[in-house]
Amino acid sequence: MIHRFKTSYPGVFYREVKRIGKNGNEKVFYIVFKKQGKVIEEKVGRQFVDDMTASKAAGIRSDRIENKRLSRKEIKQMEEEERKVKANRWTINRLWEEYKSQKENSKSFWTDSNRYENYLKPRFASKEPKDIIQLEVDRLRINLLKTLKPQTVKHVLALLKRIVNFGINKGLCPGMNFKIILPQVNNLKTEDLNPEQLSNLLKALDEDDNIQAANLMRLALFTGMRRGELFKLKWEDIDFERGFINIIEPKGGQNQKIPLNEGSKKILLSHMRTESPYVFPGRRGNKRIDINHQVNRIKKKAGLPEDFRPLHGLRHAYASMLASSGKVDIYTLQKLLTHKHPRMTQRYAHLRDETLKQAAHLVDSMIDEVIIKDDNTLSNYRM
Image 1 (tube, rainbow, N blue to C red):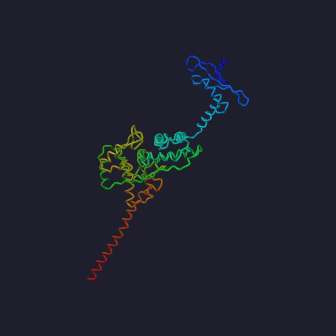
Image 2 (tube, rainbow, N blue to C red):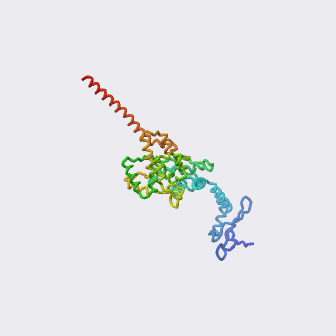
Image 3 (cartoon, rainbow, N blue to C red):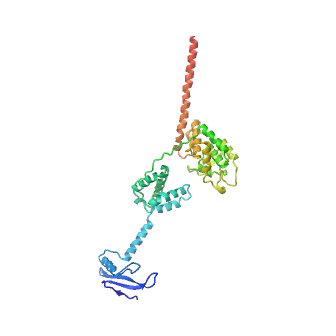
């Protein structure tokens, strides 16, 4: 049994034990006191590890007698309970990890991961949704709008909203006590090419040495396909016999098919095939992930406006040409563009309306011609 050494303080003694990680001994202090008729002996700390002295031990003894301090055992129990509570807390970071594990195969996974790591994690990682206040989200929105586009800020806040809703729907946590206000975004930019610009572009495509980029831009113009759809396009998705292009997992959700018109058919039949399953393969025959440098070079050579987006702009040009022809209704245009909702196609409605107005104005000139003709006939009769 280790010997107990008395101190000059009542109810305080120590034992000598080996120092932790060093040579020699150190004192371990204990206190003894009565509480509710029961004698209690407690360890209060080590001489070097806890910087404990007989005087400090006496002060702890006094606090324990007056119920001003918890015992080491009680403190450890509380810490353990806190750890358990923390382990059960569904913080934003924990919700994100769970949300992420179920979304890793989604098309927006990597983009969402970057948004979370850069903008949400530094501010909300350790917070539960119920502890987030509106002022914090408002400040985030205001600060992000100083350097980012409204559309990007909208995506960041929408991700926070999705993470919280995920936790609520799974019954993991309560939600926030306010609604997240998303910034207003005017993303209905509709690009078009006038006849001269279109002619310059076609000429630049014919003269460019990069057949992959040139044909990809041609197909965007002739089909209105999205950038991602063109990158994912495989030869097996093209039905030359029936005259359709199958679009797998489009932005709208379900697989779609669009007509293979003569222009796009001619492009594809003349396009060089490789061992890759992709029509426009990237490195080592894998799915292409970028072509910005090549298409921007062609755009510049064609003298197109600086803000014209080479691929998405061609999709708009395709839609604008069809809408302004007056021969394609909005429902058909929606199907050709594989829009999930008709409101996305409504941005082109004014082009069709203008064409219809011009057609209606033909009645004026036709009636005027009849009136003039009748006036001339009547004048001749009078003579």
